[in-house]
Length: 319
Image 1 (tube, rainbow, N blue to C red):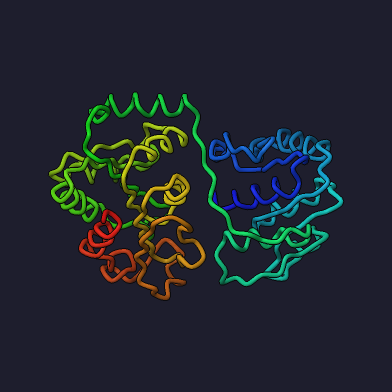
Image 2: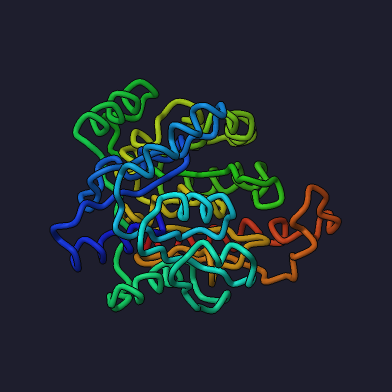
């Protein structure tokens, strides 16, 4: 999501080019209807034979330029194996991966990720220019979202919808379920709204916990949508409240007001960009938390964010 302004800038600068974006399997739908792309190849990580076939296809694609927006060794190797004559990438750690590129982008590690990605355009004489995130759904996605909302009993309601995104990649980046439940009750009482709880199939447990703990009949959609069906549901919502995760950026791209809850990640680097947003972040030194055992207990960064703070942020956006 955060790289879509790079695609827009490349399309504007090179309108006749064929533009591809290589992604991990499972994320390709985010770009499925992106008007700036011609092709979305997917990285193969299965059997050795499939990986060899993938590298062969990569070489045969005949790319004139490859821009590596990641900082991973695998992507650096794939960039070199593409045999492209122009290979642009980052090497802030000054490691061997810099040998894989013909141009190394110099940028500050403290800059926002979207702005960092845009700096990769300078070797192509493209002036970095921040633009909106791009996310589109199809009429079929919209129809399936409407069908799902009717199925859960909110399709014909004129009550506003609020989406909660309670899951996170790591447990210490997740706001507690009981606080989401209390927030659901307070928002429902204040605005006569309906609360939807999104998430993947793996996040059904926390979505159901919010539903059980709240008095306001929250509706769990966890595990019931594809990425684009979820995006289409978001388009029908009035507000998004969630942890630091991909759906937060999807909501921004679709123009929703967003209350973003940040723990160990720095929102100056990974926060929502554009639109109406409220970011809650305690700014603790959480470098020690990037492992499975955060030792702060009840003083950890997410538990320091109170329900009152989130409710007040939601009220400001609602106003």
